[in-house]
Length: 140
Ligand SMILES: [Zn+2]
Image 1 (cartoon, rainbow, N blue to C red):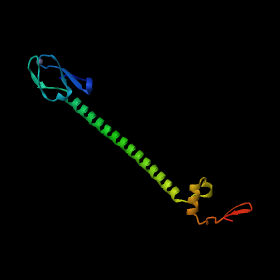
Image 2: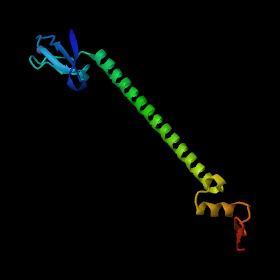
Image 3: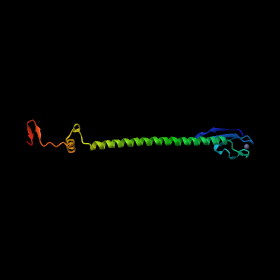
Image 4: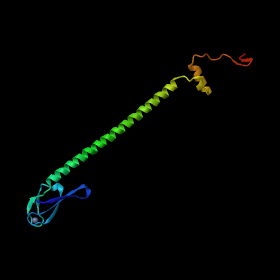
């Protein structure tokens, strides 16, 4: 039996052929290939053609699905890697901040009284017992 397979909308495939008994033009979904068919004109029973095309189409769908799954997996792997790098960077920033908080400031950091107090508290430098300005000293 001669037949043709064409693409239809929605990713469907249509197989078109002629009834072997009355030569009526018949169209059938490709997924019905290999199944018994009654001619709507003469009720002649035959098997819908297009089985090799249907199997090839099924294989194409399976391959396309496998490709989609693989692409999805690759996207997820990229997202996981990005999250990992982000978490690593955040951990490094936290560690740097913790280290900076733990270390006493150096002289060059001392820009206000609070830092001076922290420096004096953290360093072994003894607090000045007197403050001298020129010749006059306090507490004298
Ligand atoms: Zn027929």
